[in-house]
Image (cartoon, rainbow, N blue to C red; front, side, top):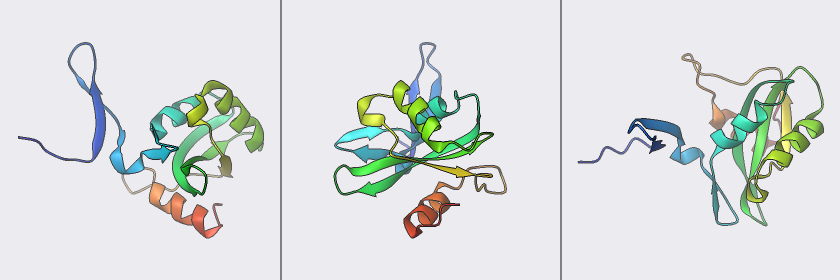
Length: 126
C-alpha cells in the first residue's frame, strides 16, 4: 500500500525517512530536477541571510529557472546570488534574487511559496 503525500524524501543510513521537499515545488530546468531546499540551504549559509525561499519561474530557454526570495541584513542581492551560484552546480544556478523584509508564512509558519510565485509573475515581488 502506498500513500501519496506529495513529499519527496530519502532514507538515511540508519533507515530513517528524511523529508526533503514537496514534489510540486520541484523545479525542472533544462530537463534537470532542482530541489528548492538544496538551494535554500546554500543561501542560508551566507552570513547576511536570515531567511530564504526558492521557487521556479517560467523560462523560455530552460522551462523553469530558480528565483530566490531572501531576507537579508545587507541589501545586495547580486552579492548573495554570486555567493550561492559559486557553491551550486551549473544546472542549479539562481537566475534572480528578490530581497524582502519578511517571507509570507501561514499561521503554522510554513512559507507560502505560491504567494511568492504569484507576486513574482505579476511583477510585484516585494
